[in-house]
Length: 447
Image (tube, rainbow, N blue to C red; front, side, top):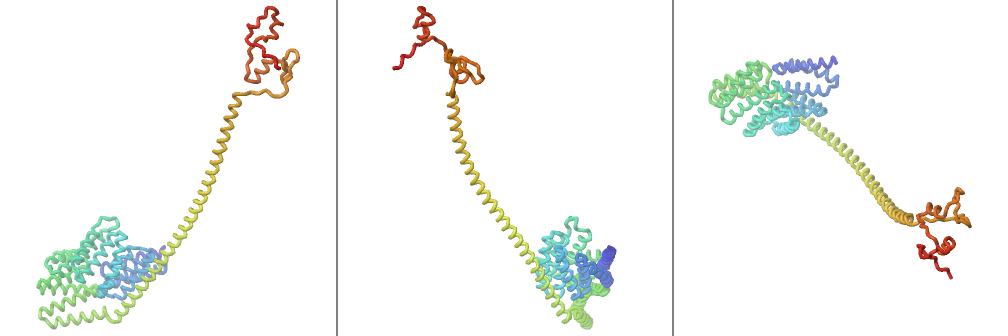
């Protein structure tokens, strides 16, 4: 934990030195942070520190060391999947290629960074990428596209977003104001560039930013020269050169020397023009030597190889995920098919059972109907019935003797009505018997 805190402190001090253009001190502190983070295997921290180291070397015009640091930082950023960090490093690599006059490579990596910045949605990263793209387009003479990107960059930096710090918005103003001023000079409108450059110089002096002041004086010299104000242009270029040497801004010094050589030549001062030109060529050879060019090309090839490896790993990961998805989809489809088959067979059996049950219910209903009809119509007495031979009473199951009409009435739906037959009437009533008063007559004897 202590080592991690020490690395953070060293990295923070390095960034402070970097912002104040003290590049040697920045590299010393950032180197300390780098060693600790390598020991801790802190990939996220390594990506940030290496990017800062690359920025320090870039400001000093040491493009080989800068590109080497940027490319190593890119490896860690890609491993972390940090789209914002990847976009920023790609822009830094693109700016390095642009200074090296490798415009095709610069355009490729900056546009890749823009795609990642757009997908991340972070306004600072978007603004940074758009400014770099505008600078590249201005260098190539695509002035309308450059202007559009500068204004889009300013809008991104002005976004009210909690991720956007006040210093980030200030950075956006510095970058785009200087870029727009230089673009106006290139478009043949140097007088419109002067107010922008005056505001930049005033802000740089107010914040003690020598690099910003050196850059603004260089652009001011170009604008004054375009207006024919040669003496003012020479003074601005000399001031830019002095500041650039003081803060080891070799690329700015190189541009200032080229500007002074051209201005002195136009003024007819050949010795001074030649002196500036010789200093320019000597400095250029230290920055853009043949051996450095070869090493830069080697680094570029390594970067392309690492990019291809990363792309291959990404594709392999995508293919592996697709195979898993296909396997899972196949399993799900097979399971769904099996379930559908089981459901189909279950439905067949269910329909068959329903048909059987419906047929059984129909038969049962018919049987019940017949039974209910029979029960409602008939109650049958069966078996051997003991009856008295004399009085004709019947003995029930409990041994009691009952009258015939009682016995039968309790065991069937039959009902009795009483009358006197023609055989019993004379016996009971003698001569008083009147057969016509009987409610029924006797059946004729069977033959």
